[in-house]
Image (cartoon, rainbow, N blue to C red; front, side, top):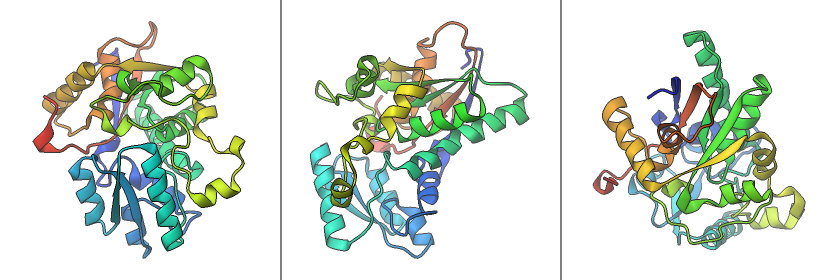
Length: 288
């Protein structure tokens, strides 16, 4: 699985789901309450998370096993916002956005720092590019900022499913625009919206409109391109990762690999780092 050399960062191997450990612990440097599952319990805090009712059961079960409360809602941005607002009103908790919070973005950026350090010291090579999934863009923006702060010439390519291509459309038009067609993709973790789809009441009342979208300016200015992959390409990459690499990766975590395998990258990109993000898969509902 090379183009010429592909080096992976397996964030999906973390015990917590999809980079929660990195982003939550970084956010806890400044916040006493947050909406991520494992770290609050370890620090003696409480936690509640809203999740769409069609989220994989393995994700719900994992969150609950860490002692967090799961509040299910309809799988729409409006329902998620309402659920978050109701939790803030009922408990007085501080709302931490899953992708648009600056501390979350910074925590996820450590993926790039770790990857660049690993390839330099363990493999003796310099990456031409990092390939990373994009949905809400917390991971993507964090990786782009971190990677280009230590290696300004590196390329950062984001990858998105064709059935949830709002980030791609925003990037082409150079403006936030949301989804322009119904979302339909096997990559459930990327069915989100670039921008702030779930601002809690305390944020809406105190945050000026032009300061609410923290991810989009970084994606616009630091990501070199956004690539699209089909569901068939995603499932094919996911199956290869399972069978040949023996790693449990969910569809959303396989999109970056899918882009490389489908030759979506431009010529001259040889040494690439691929971010695997997420291993939440219901074994009863495998997509093949």
